[in-house]
Image (tube, rainbow, N blue to C red; front, side, top):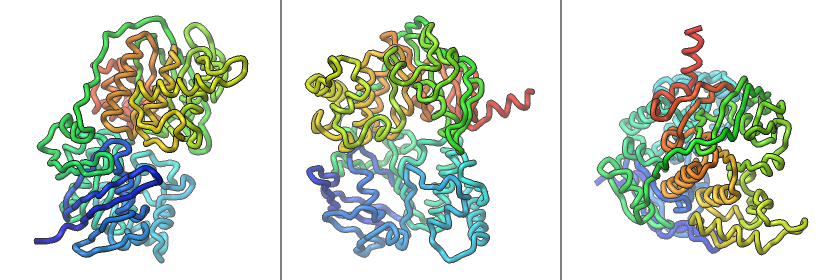
Length: 505
C-alpha cells in the first residue's frame, strides 16, 4: 500500500508545567482535505507548528512520504513541500503584492518574472490578484488570496490552513472551497483547522479530533452532524443558544451623523454614521475588517472624540467625553484584540479584572482592595468556566478562548447599561462560543443595550435583532435578522449595497 503523505507518531510537547501534546498520532493521505478539530487550548496550533517546523516536539516521529524526517524550521518545511497559511496575515502594508511575495520566497528572480508567475497561478486557481497593487488597498479577502497564492507558488504537497474563513464573506468562502477542492484533485493534501463545523462538514474528507493534547477519535465529517462533532471535541453535549423574548426599552445609545477621520494612512474614514440601540435589544454591525470598524469602535468608546451630540448615551451627549467618563456612565467594552487591548499579557487575571472593574468597589479611598479584586476575578473564572490556574495566573497563560471568556465575564460583571462587543467569538471553540452568545442574549433580555460588531454572519443572525453593514466607512440601512439572509448580508459586506445605490442614483 502507498504510505500516507504525512504520518505523525507519538508527538509530544510541553511548555513548563503545561503539556500541549501528549502522544499525538496523525495520518494525512495524498490528495485529501483533512480537518483537525479541538477546543481552544486542545493543542491544534502546537501540532500545526510542529509540522511546519516552527516548534520542535519533545518526543515522537514525523514521516514524510514514508521516510522519517526532522523538520528543523519553516525553511526546511517549505523545502519538503509543506506550506502554511496563518490565521494572522504577514504582509507589509506599504509594499506591493509582488514585493511581499518576493520577500517570502527569497528566490533569485526579477519582480517582473515573479509578477507574471503570480498572475498565472492566481488565475489558474480562481484567485485573481494584481501583483502591482499596494497591500493597503486590498480588502481582507484579497489579502488572504495573496497569502494562499504565495504558498501555491511553492507547489506544495501539503497546505496547512489555520482558520482561513474567519474574515471572508459567504461568496469568498465558496470560492476558497472550490480552490481547495481543485488542489486536492491535483494531489495536494490540505490540513484544515477551523471552529466552523458546518464548513468542515461541507469541505473535508476526514477529521481528527484532539482533546487536551490527545487524539480522541477520527470521523468522516460528511457523515456526522455538527452537534456530534462538537460533542467529540468537548466530551459532552452542550446546550444550543436560546433566544429570550425581546423587551425593547428606552433609547440607550444613539449615533447621529458621525464623521471620523481614518485611523492612520491605511485606515478608513467614517461618513455620516447613524444608528440607535434601545435597552433590551442587540444590534449587529456586520462587515469585513478594514471598512471602518476600528474607527467606529474608537469613537464609541471615547478613544477618539467627536462633536458632543454625535454620540448619545440615553439623553446625555458624550461625544467629547473620554473612555473613563463613558465607562462611569455605564459603557462596557469587549475588544477584538484580546492580548494587548483586552488584557495585559504579563499581568494576573486579578490585576486585569481591576483594569476596567475598578469602579465596582475594587478601589477604596484611592487604595486597591486586592482581596476584592481577587474575589472578583475568581467569580468571573467560576461563572464562565474559565480554564486557568486561578486569579493569579498571567493572562498570557490562558488559551485564546479562555481569555475571551474571562474578558466577557469581566465586562458583564460590571452591570453595564450598554455593552459593545467586537468579534466576540473570533477564534473561539464551539463550547465557548455557545456560552458567550447565550450570555449576550441573556444580558439583552435583562434590559441592557448590546452592540455586536462582527464578521461572523452566523453569529450576527443567531444573536442579533437587527443588522446593518459597514462598508467603505458607510453604514447600510438596517434589516430585521428574520427579513434577511447570510447571502444578502455577504453581498452588502462586499460593497453590493452601495453598488446598487450608485446604479439607482
